Length: 414
Image 1 (spheres, rainbow, N blue to C red):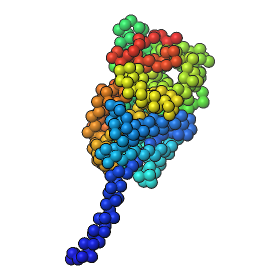
Image 2 (image 1 turned 30 degrees about the horizontal axis):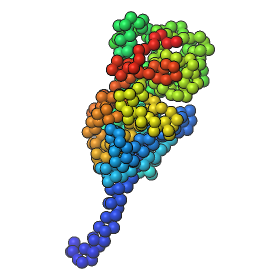
Image 3 (image 1 turned 90 degrees about the vertical axis):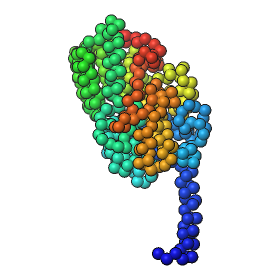
């Protein structure tokens, strides 16, 4: 092409027109999709999650004196102070709705990353869509172990999965047995979606390896209208420990049915889910004094790390609740994603993915009792140390592992 004065002028005009766009891109907002159940039976989970993500976004976008990534200074310094804007989508606990909403967030809302999803069954479809569009996905609170083993490049999970959680439970059983507590038999009780199935499989494998006898292994239909037959089986099994893997409504029905049928196991050690939810304790907490649940968060940590208490107070102001196992993981999910976007200095999916791969966040710069956040080649953080919490006097206290514990376990439960 012959260079003429007109071409030079046109080039200059185009460059001048692009300059403000480039500047805008440098200082514009960074749009992140957040996909949760905001209606239906799990709506309260979604509402609480929304407050957790808003608390994290507030800390990222404003200036706070916390030893937490992105707290100091406003916005993402790697993108010229760009602010994070969250776009919420409602998957209604339906994997296919989740798939459609993920696609909408990516193609219409132009999000550069997605965080979700509470139900593991929904994480399956959402992460597949993210993989197709090469958009990074953080599984903030999904605990199904199979999720990170599907060969996906854009899938990441900072929190523990159910094999890690179940291992902590069996480590606890072994420690209690050494002290002379009778724990020989177990009853497993799990719902039939990927969460319950994977949890049951992990616990069966560990029981076999550690020498515990499973006297009842009950897989029930999620959102079942009645659990009477199942509870009769649990009662007949009369195990030393009942190990439920149930979401909130099923958990409430289980506890009510147990009371009606007079079934009182010596101990309940739950796979979190419904057993970490305020709604369950509001409904049947009087029947659960001494229940133990696994978790990844302990508010007791605030005594050692004051920012945990301060950030919890910010969340409580928005939600009326303390952080629990879910809301704490949701909060950290957004911090980890935004930290990667900041280091990538880009909203390009592949560059964010590379930054996530390079993540190495020390545990003391999080609100969690973890060693650190560092992903393996499947996108799983293996340094997210679980804790066991016991419900005593209307609140949860950390009882295991010993380095995190603030109280001895009460056994049997009252």
